Amino acid sequence: MKESTYKIIELVGTSKKSWEDAAKNAVETAGKSLKELRIAEISELDMKIENNKVVAYRARVKVSFKYLE
Image 1 (tube, helix red, strand yellow):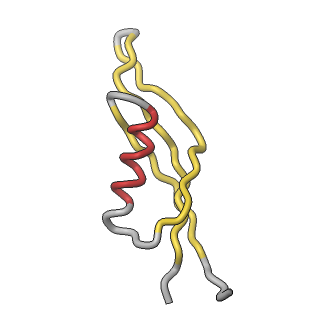
Image 2: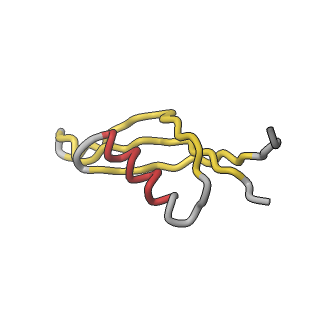
């Protein structure tokens, strides 16, 4: 098996619908400019609140991608 090198970056995705959509938005947006995405790990979830109501969900996501040779 050939050895590989990976980089891990942290992203924050948002959604008005759910944390799942927020995480998905982060990964899919990153995938437009980064290639060879491998693993995504949700590291933190939070919500934006306005006037005592939840108006947005946020997911902090660590994404790894392979350095291409």
